[in-house]
Length: 222
View 1: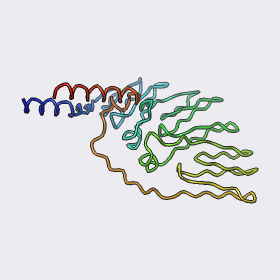
View 2: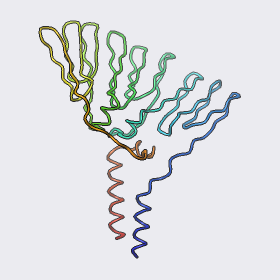
View 3: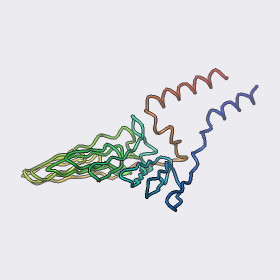
View 4: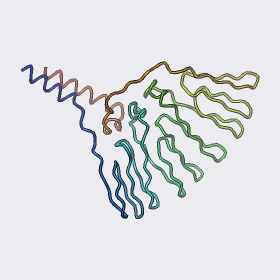
């Protein structure tokens, strides 16, 4: 009986195998990877099972998220995308399309802002994402005249904007002079096996519900 319970426990805790890379041949070219796509003149694959590829105007565009975002997926799930407008393509997260332009943040915790016809995207560092995880504070973008900056605790003068680069950073405005300070991270984030791509794509609520369900199964088997 004890061996049966141990076997059930091991089966429940064993993660599903990672997806295998595939290869795709088109236009006299063969590529291997993940989410492979081919067009009339191009063929490409993402480098990791967390990436994505899209086809626009016979061109293939692929994007792979940073590993910090994979280890700390947002509550809504990790789902990078590619968008196109007027022949311009951008891939990433929180993509913004405006006035014939497109831009995307490179992490799900980044921010994009349009100002004077230009699109600016900003992302917190991988260190900040490791330190705060999915609870990381949402950055903001602030403008002053034609200037724009993104980050945390932003302060602006008439023509200048400065922002801290981490959630624990602070900025001050003194006699129209702007200064920002970011304390160093004191957290070391050690990760083991990467989570399965299917898991990081799920919303946090669904992941937690499934974890609770597995715990109930384990209790029932004891």
